[in-house]
Image (cartoon, rainbow, N blue to C red; front, side, top):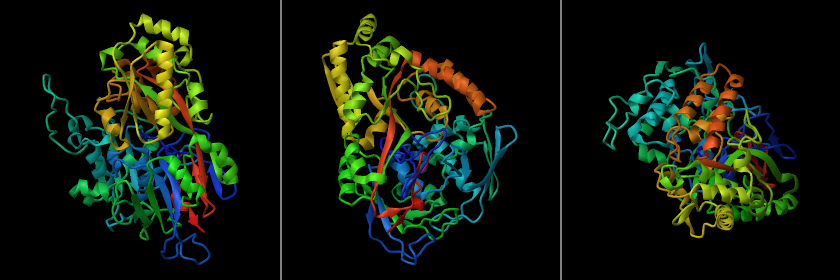
Length: 562
């Protein structure tokens, strides 16, 4: 995820993770971390009607509940990596696979995904599935969605997820030398996608990729109906999915995204409630206030400052689980003032991560010295070493050797959560005190515009970057965040080669040493410094039951309302 300016979690309001007890079952996993869930901030109860469904309360009509959310940027699966968007899309769409509590893929829209060489994959679509408008879900539905995302002129966020499918380069031609504009592609279809029949999609990759099946759990690979291609702009505000919930009306910007149970759903887990209302909040503090007042059923990211109170108030309805969400401080490597690795390392070493975690997050997060979360296979606790260790004296010496910094140091973050400005304030104070940078200003960007700002490289100073894991693999962090088209403008052919070799390894176990070498290289150059790993703090009201929170899915379809 994603993705994510990903902040909250389900595994956050956009991260994800959970555990068990009373009416909550939080499934602990051995590996992998939060995926698409960080976007969920909260769920709030709301009366509602609807006919009885499997799992309803002893003959009573099931009721609605609501999810507190920060405003998404898009609701087209191929055009968003925001955890806030993913929280909604997870209810509206069934992907080919989902990640089980053991961190392994489980079939959902797919019947099977097989390959003899890990390069050519055969995907069998489970028959009988329908979109919310009645259109059949077929192999072509997936091919159409993937082609649209991969087509360069569309400029969709998840375009790069299809870079390992044959034909991607032809859909994304480079601008000729001396020109800033790329030519229009001669085709709008990936040559690596072959619709064999209505239930069979053959995918040919550019190289063997053992993690392809688990990658397909990401919402960017969801199918889309023909209506999406006929009116993309309209579809973005009223998406038609194939999941257990369907949109009820249109997306009311900055207010509400209302869904209802899809009675034509043919998947393995029909919704047990009448619907989910995603209430849009300006911040999670307000959502927590609603949780306390009984207006919200589930808050997936309780503000760190409120965790002690929440534990007492909610009792066994409070859930705390290690997450896969990471916060980083990125550097604009394309700006000559930040082009030197030593300057970037000096800034990293001048930041007291533990002090910030204690002061801003009430000790709930974990300072990090790795680019990947602890739940990811191949994680090493001290991968970053000295460059991520707080040492003001060494930081200042390295800073001076690097030539220091002149001018105004702009720090970028979004307005999605008050804690962002709080920890950026702490960083600013530490840089002033430890490095002597006197002129520091904040650049607070509206959350809906923040990711676009970073992708366009409009930031001229260090910036808050966040990642919510889409699927449990170091590749998802390293290639997505440090690979081609990264937000820092960092270029390293050696890094890209290591990622390519790791991706082509025959097994996950064989790929890990290569991913670790790539991580070492990125840490040595420090285009982005790891800060801390999220711990997901959730709470729910007494109005909902059958709440199952795990590291990979909000499981909204299992929730019932009393």
